[in-house]
Image 1: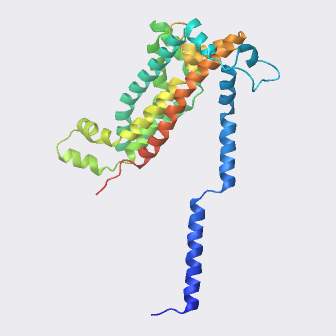
Image 2: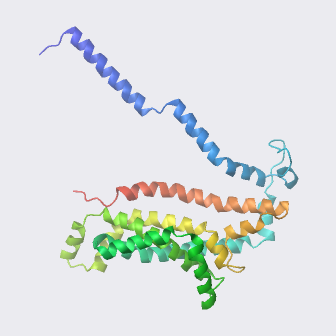
Length: 296
């Protein structure tokens, strides 16, 4: 059936308008981009200001009014941080506590989350609610009893005590997050694996954990970040030998100006890995949410 010239013109106008709308939808407005850029700049302004203060000479860094240009950048604050303090030991303590607490939390959380996702009951619901309540408690209500227990057991001021305390604090979050990931995996995979002769433990190890790779990695990254930046628990459960970087930074505040610059340098060294890990976590969050589906 042939179309008249008027109909062809109308169709061309409609098609052109639709394609224009699609192109406009794909291209973000300039105003939105500017607003997002300003928002990012505002959020990063404390880190930018700290970077400028740390790389200035001490007399210039604390001058009033602030000096923004015309000074020679220096990294003396970082050199003093490594040479005049025990920052390296504190950094090692922080990494050990974060890694140990993350590994233990995942070893406990994976089977617990799987059981809670596959065997729903009143007991499971009560356990999940109790875990949520424990997570919502004020931190002092949890840390002070841990302080008494660690003193009574003779493990106060050790990385072991701090790591175990962080496992207990972060375990509810780990279980809740992993349980949601397990719930995305169809139960038909469990039944198929058990028909093939797998036990529950074998099926968890051979089928569920490989499918849960992005979810486990996402949970591990978050738990690691929580432990890596923890301040209050480390302040209460450590003294000198197991002090972590956040506690060290707090002890430098209110001291001399060079010590304040060292605190800024330590904050930068603590913040940079967090930025890197958070950037990686963003990718695996998306992958974890979309994984576990049955294809084919």
